[in-house]
Each structure stands twice: as C-alpha cells, then as structure tokens.
Amino acid sequence: MSEIAATTVHEAYAFACMKCGYGWEQSYEIEHHVDVHGHAFVVYTADGERVPSPLSTPTCTNCGGHVVRIMRAGRVAGVQELLRKQRTPRAAEAAAKDRAVSTAATPVRHWRLSDLLHPFHRR
Image (cartoon, rainbow, N blue to C red; front, top):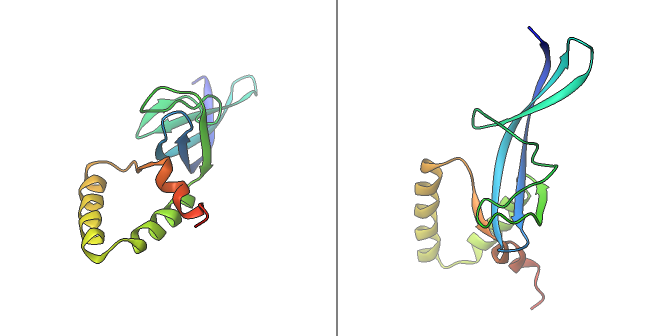
C-alpha cells in the first residue's frame, strides 16, 4: 500500500455564484493521508466520488463561473427560515411541499443569491 489513511473529517460548505446568483450546499469527507515518504496530503470526496478541493477553485454548478463565494454551511438555512416565516400560510405550505420533494430527490440544497440577500436589504 502506498499510503496510510490518518483521519477522516466531515465538512459542509455553502456556495453562492456571484455571476449568476445560483447557490448550493455540499458535504465533503476530507481524508488526511500520509504517503510512504511521510508527506501529508488530503483527498476530498463528495457523494462517494473523489473531487477537487472546494476551497481552491470552486466552480458554479449552474453557469461554470469561478467567482464563487464560500460560506459556512447552515448559515444560509437561517436566512431561508426567515424567508419561509415571511410568506403567507398558503405559500408556506406550497414551499414546504416543494422542499419535501426536492430533499427526497437530492441531499444538495439550492437557492438564489437574491433570496439570501433579501433579508439584509434596508426597507
């Protein structure tokens, strides 16, 4: 074996494309390894597949742009909750059904940048 796995940690990040406004969150398993020569290296996997580091050159999954803002995971969830509470009860029910369908289909969450920034606009 040419490497020895030292530790694996789980991290999640939120991303927002500054070009098209698309947003998403992704969870990663970060495997810290040491090769036979004692050199440390890191392997990122997402959904069981090896991927490049999301911190080095993030790419928008919608438009392919490279001007992507990286945020702490879950931070966006608070903004989404505020938006949900501001809606009428009927709209909130429809949104809850949409979320249930989209969450059942994929664990990756998506949102629009304008939705994230709306609560911070001055009235």
